[in-house]
Image (cartoon, rainbow, N blue to C red; front, side):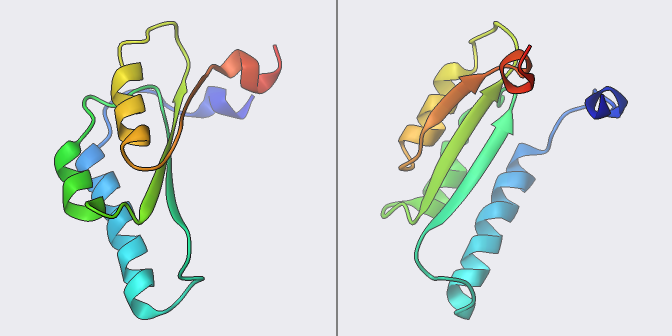
Length: 106
């Protein structure tokens, strides 16, 4: 399986990832490129360390031009479910929880 070859470890730079995603969408919006209608960010993760309200406030409030969809993958640990729900639901999105067994059909 291809996923077996992917190294696991370390941690993500959440602030840089979210900021880069919002910056990219803002550049396209200001440039007139793209469809200029719906914008969305999709986050697939085993859980964020926090909901990052300061980033959403800076980039997506008060009008929420970008919808935010979160996919919580793996494990039985639901400790991050609340943060994922907050990120999605406060930004016109949706949270989904799944696991690799479901995705791969085991």
